[in-house]
Amino acid sequence: MHDWNPNLYLKFEKERTQPVIDLISRIELDQPNRILDIGCGPGNSTRKLQKRWPDAMIVGLDSSANMIEKARKASPDIQWIHADANGDLSTLGTWDVVFSNAAIQWMPNHELLIPKLFSLVNPAGALAIQIPEVSKMPMQLAIEETAASKKWQHISIEGDTFTLNEADYYYDLLNKLSDEVYIWETHYYHVMENHQQIIDWYTSTGMKPYLDRLSQDSDKKEFAKDVLKIIKNAYNIQNDGRVLFPFKRVFFIATKHE
Image (cartoon, rainbow, N blue to C red):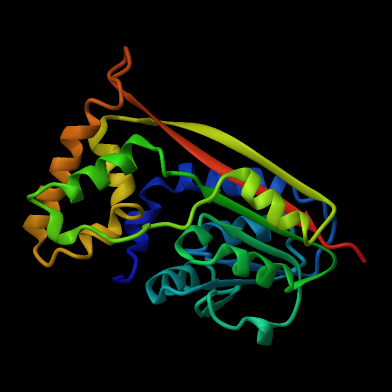
């Protein structure tokens, strides 16, 4: 997959950062000394962690060079690491908080990934993760329907674009690691000015694997237009002319006891 576009991602920074704020607020640690932000992107989540715990050593890690460059320029006082979280992270040591917001859905084998991330947590520390659950979202279904059409079947993706599981899956997985697990879901309703804004939002995330298979900008725009035609029937226009974009997210926090 091509590298990420941090500027496009941050077009909806406020909306993307609210789940970060909600997850951080549920971490019951007063003064963690070491915090690792997995899949930190352009650093919006890492900066919120720094605001909550200004005295902690905080490191943001991401596999995208573009995202890390954007994060480093915006916050040179934070340590940033360009690395793939699917690889060996043991050389980074252990942490009081291992945090990840909207990142591990891009990583396979959660039955191996979650225990690996939990192994990085210090005693009395916590693993805190948020995952967008888009598998049944009309926007995601519209993309898959468009890609499966005769016109676009040459860019259809075999297998799952994301690694997504229901909350009970993560509870059973975490329960083997910790006897203190908090897990919840939140449905956000983002207010979009129109249907095109939903396309703009998703272009930098869920639609990206499909757009990356198209070499011509004109084809990318045409694919997005075909998706737009479908979602206009899936998301109602409100009385004020705007469109609500429901977005489900799964959160969990697991504590490692001393």
